[in-house]
Length: 77
Image 1 (cartoon, rainbow, N blue to C red):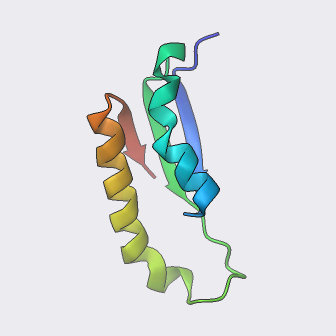
Image 2: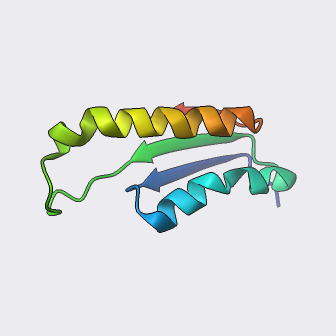
């Protein structure tokens, strides 16, 4: 079975970052495109979702470039 496109939600926890960092390993199974979205637990301490947005956008952009460098098409949502 080929997997052409995946939606990956990340909260920047270690497990979710590990998943994002390993997505290129799915290329042999047909993976071509990644839809990457950041999710925020609004109950989490440490600031509001709005205050974290610019930092999160930077991290998402770095992950996007990394995946594109590995030959995947990436859309950040």
